Amino acid sequence: MLAAPRSGRAAAVHNRAVRSLEVETQAARLFVYEWGDVDAPAVLYWDGRGGTGLHANEIGPILAREFGFRVIAPDPPGHGRSAAVDPERLRPSALACITDVLFEALNVRRAAFMGFSWGARIACAFGARCPDRAAALVLVDGGYVDFVDLPDFDASAGLADRVEAARRGARAYANLDSYFADESRAIGRWNDALAEAHAAMMRESGGHVIPIATPEVIGAIHHANCVEPTAAVHAALRRSGVPILLITPADSADANDAAGRAGLDRFGQEVPQLETRTLPTDTHDLVSHLPDELARAIGAWLRPHMPA
Image 1 (cartoon, rainbow, N blue to C red):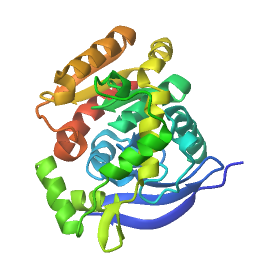
Image 2: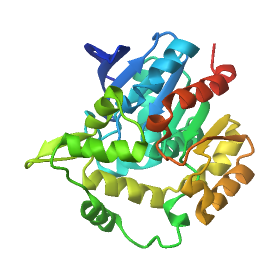
Image 3: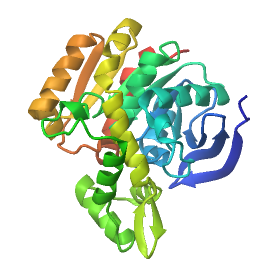
Image 4: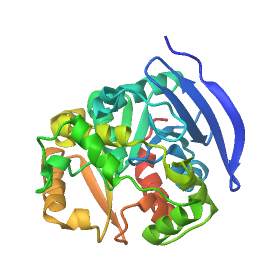
């Protein structure tokens, strides 16, 4: 049985109206951000690995204000303010089921699913598993390359190996300012909204600032892509006929290297309804780097595909 959503405090994110609430179901306890009218056509945003729903705090208001959408952006399990789940529930198929349950709790019948990076894999799983729920899929520089496509990837490693690799690769910062400096260099811009979104990913521990998503969560996500590669759902996506838009940076290394080119070609051949667009940058995090351009490109493409 689903528990009723519990409304959280009213909030404002730098003059951009946002609601926050906690949704408890038997599948997961998720913290959710929302922009727009609750009766408007819904767009679900799923962030990249380690990120939170608050990463949509620049694109969400544009999609709500200029295109009339309701934007729903959960913190994924084990991220931000959402509770962790066991590793099996971090598989794309399981997260697609959790999204389906979230829609039930929020009284959403159909929605567009927009996923950034790792979130694009979850979007593909949702479209394949719940095509009657998916009005359209928007993939923001993700979902076209699996780990097993990479030439130096060890496909034989297990979950414990991937957790240990995530632990070795985890970064700790002396304070938020040093973390923000790193992020601003990578993104190429910075403002209060970005600071708020990126702070939501981190916590203090032992005198350092570290990611909320633990090595156990990150390792489980990496392992899940090996067990359930996105390419495995291409046939189901083709049968579904769900419209799909993939947006990549025009000068992306992923899109231009051999694995990226092969992944894009395979996706287009196996899922003929896929449409592709590029934005003029080489930065992977399009959500942070070009929020206005990204939101308007997505909104214009989505408009004819959304339920009335």
